Image (tube, rainbow, N blue to C red):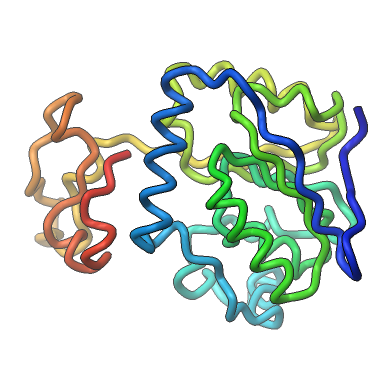
Length: 237
C-alpha cells in the first residue's frame, strides 16, 4: 500500500482509518493521552506561532538551539534538506514536531495512537497551510505503510510507552529508505531525579529518589513540576 495522500479541499489533510484490536498497553496509553489532551498538558498543545526564519537560522547554525518550546528538537542536521522528503513523525502527535517539518516543506505523515493528539496535527496544518496525513495506529504495527517509503523518521520520547522497543525498531528499519534516517528520543526515568538548578559546582545533587518502577519511577522533581504548570504535574513516563 502506498503512502496515503487524500485531497480534502485546498489542502491534503488525509485521515486514515484507525487500527483495531489494540492490546492492553495500547488501550491504556490511548486513554491516558485522551486525558492529557483534555487537561491541556504541555505536549498536547499545537505550536501555532512558529517562525520559519528561526527554523532556517537553526539549520544554518546561526543559533545554537531553537527557542522554547522547540528547544528539544536537535541536532539541526535532522531538519536539513527535508523539503519534498517523506517525513514520518512517529508516535509524535500533538501538532508540534509535525508543524516544524511542515513549515520546512516536507511531506508530513504523523502516526499516533491518540485521535485527540492527531487532531492537534491537523489543526496546525490548517493553521499554517501545509499538507499532512494523519494515521491513528500503534507505533509497533505500521503495516499500512510500505517498505522503504520514508526518508526520515522523527520520534519524540515515546518508547517508554511500549513493553518492547525492539518492535518499534523493526518497523522503523522496514520503513526507511536505504539512505533514510531515524531520529529517536530516549529517556531514562532516573534522570528525573536531577534538575539543572541542583548543580553545586561539581555535580548535580539528586533530590528525588528513583524507586525502580511503580508510582515513583519517572516522576519529575517538584522544582520541574512547578515550572511545567498545574496540568502537567502528574506526568509519568
